[in-house]
Amino acid sequence: MRRIKTLFLVSLFLLGGILIFSSPPVLSGGISIWPGKLTITMPEEYPEEEIRYEIEVDNLNSYDINVSAEIESPSLHYLKKDYTFIPDLSWVSTTPEILYIPAYGSRFLEVIITIPNEEKPLHYDERWEVWVVISEVKDQSPGTIISIELAVKLFINTPPEKARQQIPQTLYLIMLFIIVGLIAVATFVFYAKKRERTTYKKKPVVLYFKKKKGGGSRNNRP
Image 1: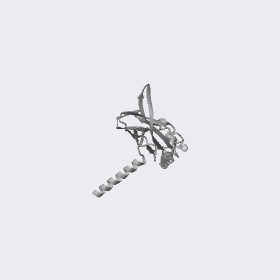
Image 2: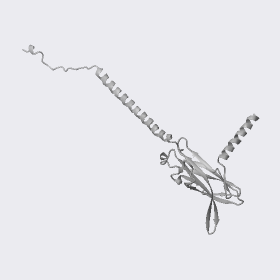
Image 3: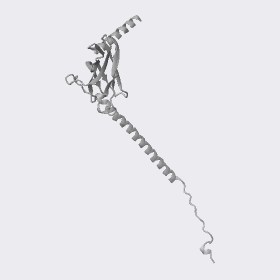
């Protein structure tokens, strides 16, 4: 039992190490953020709900600070290979607008990805790079100065092309089911009417003759 527990702890430590070193924290200007890189992959289809991820922001200073976040596209020089710019930056947002962090404290900034439903069918098998730029907000006279410190690289992989092909296939199956159903109903009605006509023809016919009033045979007249 002790050996199993030890193996479990070692495996957990290794897994945690892999996750940490695969995306190490980014440090600059007395601010640390983790993770420094986020990769969002949609292997099957677009999720029905918006996508949310948290970014941990640490204040390494001995005083309280306020930070904000802006969504930006990287310059072409820094754009990762095989990635392009997101069609609309408004699809990515953060909350809250201003994040208060006490001295040596930590807070979380939430990244929200919302792709409009009418845009989803137009963007399959695409790769976008977006930067979430973390800034320290400093209040100084005569106005507010925002000093940009560091950024989180956000990589978004949209669903593959095969996911789009599943939609027409589903519609095809529905249409096929409807057509087969209509054919079955039409066949049933046709044979029901045919059987009704056949039964009517086999029904015995009874003829009624009206008897004439008075008179007999012409030969019997005087």
